[in-house]
Image (cartoon, rainbow, N blue to C red; front, side, top):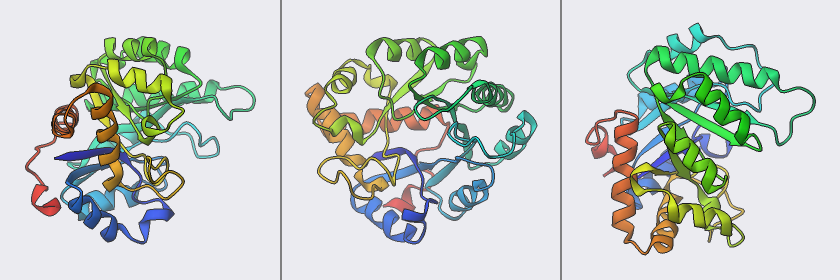
Length: 263
């Protein structure tokens, strides 16, 4: 059993062929996936996918890259999270990679998401790019550890991973860990305790080797698991079982619910 803890099935690259992508999930033993919201405007698409397919779940949130979208409120997030298939708040966090000018709006939006997560008692899906110090500081200040969550598509250092783990968060690895030049990240993947690890595709982006440069999809999470198994001298089954168990525990999902749809 494998699980894709972070994908974007509603994005244009996949939205027109969701049934095909889910069929390939079944063929590759991927039983469940979490479809991630990046704006409130497209959240209804994400929720609709979760409502349509028993083995697909949803998050609600606004990605830090979207400066132009309306201000999101704590009340909006809490209300939208009140749904049986919405299991997380996010994708939220900080991204200073392309930012021009001040980033206070990003930090305030991040704080809003953490507060909403604490009110709704649902874990956070956190995006962190070129902003580790501020991200971890705000997580601590806003008591994000009360609900926990996952550092998605992690590309930071072992020290940063340790800090997130100490705050009660899991570390999720994407197809980047399969890239030949990702030597530092491969070392982090060797060190993160298996019980604190998730795997993901972040599809349609970041397809793992040997599909690098092509459209990614949930079925390809198997290659992420295979690389971690290789790095840690474990079997694929050990990595698949641990990361799936971690997923179900973090997001409080019944592992048998929807499994027949993916069988």
